[in-house]
Structure formats: structure tokens, C-alpha cells
Image 1: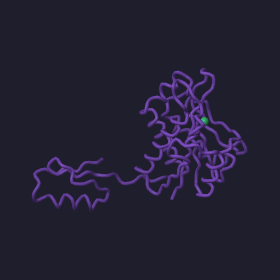
Image 2: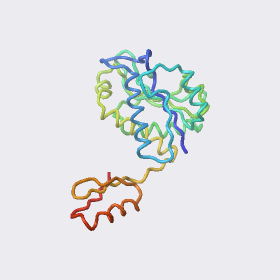
Image 3: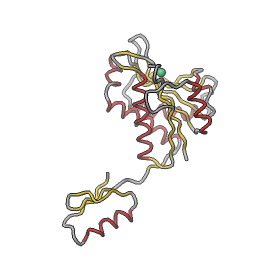
Image 4: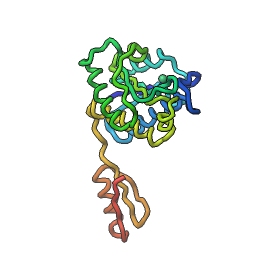
Length: 225
Ligand SMILES: [Zn+2]
């Protein structure tokens, strides 16, 4: 079982960066929920715990204590950057004490590669910092900064739900590669004379549904979801 602690940056009274009519706390939550949903729907043996699933205030200590007490395998903190309106792009952080050959750095190399493959942002590189969530977590931890909210080009992307889904998918692709996650078997719909009879993952259940209707139906469709 892979236990991911997912931390949407900021929340509640802490908006994080703001710009172009958006607040960082809402974007980090949206991207994080998308990451959780993809992982839970498409991968097996994954548990996701989040520091928040709504717009609530959480201190940094609460976040790292929760992850440590839960015994997470990996801590992933999602952020959006802000500066003076001229900076743009993606960067990510591991703790400043770690070497480039540490396990955490190796995980980060994979995450960085998969996220920057799809996010269509300027790549500002792999960085290190003494951030609380990187320092106080007992497990490997990564913090990603997904574009600048106050830069016009990045803001246009951040506003687009399809882009946020792509960014979430990039994070999931990195996690899947770094932690060797296995995909769930696909789901198949069984449609009998135009009406969905059921949706099944197990091959035997698909065959049973077909067999139940074979005598009476004029058309049975088995369709991969
Ligand atoms: Zn932030």
C-alpha cells in the first residue's frame, strides 16, 4: 500500500498568492482534489490523505504532524507562485539539507520530469529550500509551484480547468513511475438494447451480465469506460 499525504497549500484565512482575480488557496485545492481523484479511480493499493479537502485554515504544524502520525510514504505539497507580475513558470523544492543523490532527490527527478513534460510552463528548475513542510516531515517530501498567479500567461492557464487537470495528471504520472503504482483493471459497461445493465471490472461479472441477457436481448454492447 502506497500512502500519499497530499497538501493543498494555504486555505481559509490564508489565501496564499493572489492575482488576476484568483487566490492561490483555491487553485491548490482544485489541483489536489484532481490528483486524489485520478489516483483513487485509476490506481490500486493507493491511500490518499489530505491536509484539507475544503477551504479551511490549517497551520503548517498541523499538516506535518498529521502526515507524520499517519505514517505517510510521501508528502506532496501543491502550491502556485506569486512575485511581481514578471516572473513565470514551474519549479519544485526538496529540503535544502538533501543531496542530489538522496532518495528524495531521485523521486523528485521523476516527478519533475513528468510534470514538466505536460504543464506547458517555463521550467525554472529543481530547487531546494528550508520550508517547514519539507523540514518537519519524516518521509520524503516535495513541494511544487505550478505557475505564477500574477503573470498574465500563467494566469490564463491557471484559470483553465483542463490545464489544471493536465497538471494533476502530470503529478500522478510522476507518482506512478516513482512508486511503481499499478493501474486498476479497466471498467466495462454492458449495454443491453440501449440501456446500461451494469458496469464491471471483473471479467466473470461482465460475462455473467452478457449471459443473463443473451436469450432476450437483440443487441448487447460491451464497452470499455
Ligand atoms: Zn504557496
